[in-house]
Length: 179
Image (cartoon, rainbow, N blue to C red; front, side, top):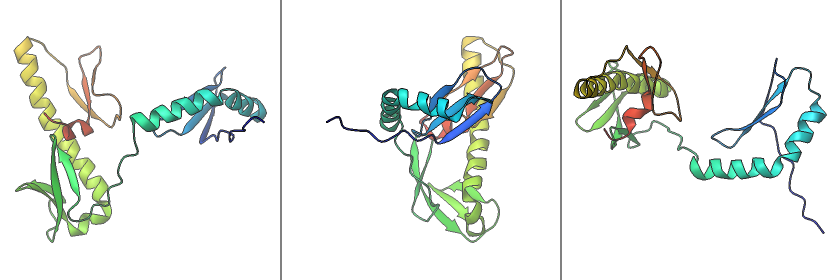
């Protein structure tokens, strides 16, 4: 008797003015289906089930290549990366700045705890702008190149890019990696 595998679940269905159905396995393993506005639901489901083996293989690859990222609670003692080094978090009673890296530890204002994720994002963005501008200037001078400007993005999988106009784009998460 043939073993039946469970049906594939569609995590997100996006309808738009397109002509074909696209199956996208996201980095977290979820399935996004992009379909034409008038595509019947049964046609979409049939395609998903027809491609079930391919989808499962891609989901397994995504789970292997991009394991679930730890969820930060922003509690004292928790570690955060900056330029490849791990620093513990401490809460402090001051209110400004909301977050700082001092004496080998991240100091988070206790009042900023409810918005700690945003405080870290802002801090990392500011550091990325500073550090990556220094690095870009260094290498541009070393190799005799010029660039237009530096843009800090929220990209998750691209390490950087350069537009035709010379804009260098880097993700703010890059400053978590070693220099």
